[in-house]
Amino acid sequence: MKFIACTEGHSGKIEAFSLEMIAAARSLVHAGDEVVAFFAGAEAEAASSLFGAADRLIVARATKSDVIPAETYARLLRDVVAAESPGLVMVPYSANGLDVAADLAARTGWPLISYVNEIKRDGESLTVVAQMYGGKILAECSVPLPAILMINPGAFAEAAPGPVDSASVSTIDAEAVLAGGKVKMVDIDVPDYADVDLTKAERIVCVGRGIGDEASIELARNLATMLGAEIAGSRPVVDNGWLPKLRQVGKSGQKVKPKLYLALGVSGAPEHLEGMSQADLIIAVNTDPKAPIFNVAHYGATCDLFDLVANLSDRLRAGTGL
Image 1: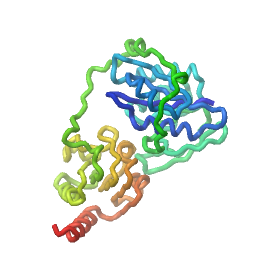
Image 2: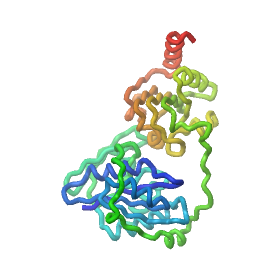
Image 3: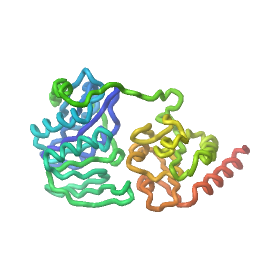
Image 4: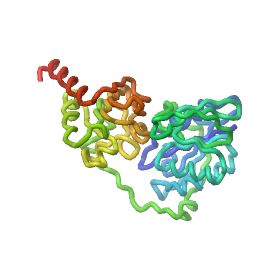
């Protein structure tokens, strides 16, 4: 059986979840099975140098566009699926994957399970654990193969990076499909992270909607200062204008792996977990004991975050003499 692991990359780098996709596929193989990585874009050499954990790599090379629109990616993937006849296609839960997985499922008629956290194989079927209602419910279901799974980034550890044997790399010219697509890439607007690069921070204090209002963020900011941490926010906080976009953690913000991640009033939507679930130590504070953030937290507290921040700040001041 073949397992296709979809990968992504642009702007000179490969998305970290690409190695997670390959690891997820590798965890399911039996003797005689094959993991096939699929990549579309301009970073063909980077993909070939990293995806050695796969048995083969299929590259849809496009040298004239840095980003492959989901419409084109889906078309290229459909052609690969038709040629390879896989038993399972694994797509990352990403802005691109949301459209690609649905397109492939509609055209193949295969079952699609989204927001997948765990997978176990039982012969020709899978037992899958997936998130529902923003992660507040974990649903276990049986899925017959062939099927399509959309995997939550962070659900699997990254596969070891390494080069793919040149004999195991197949290249497709994607330019004709890209030129014939209805969606055209006009421009890429990338924030300047020179002043605030959360990806390099060893400690982060992140506030979510539970912080209440912009004024209350100052309490968390003071705590962050005492901890030697950067202040960050979830998307609702940034959308409300309480923190700048450069300090957003999550799918549409920065993806971080600090040594300490203190989440205050963060519910833990899948989009947010994608950006921080690989932190070394995650401490979550939320009054809702069913908040999805607790699914990835190493330590959690269901107390009022303002009480915790006040008490922790007092202890830090007492210990430092501030």
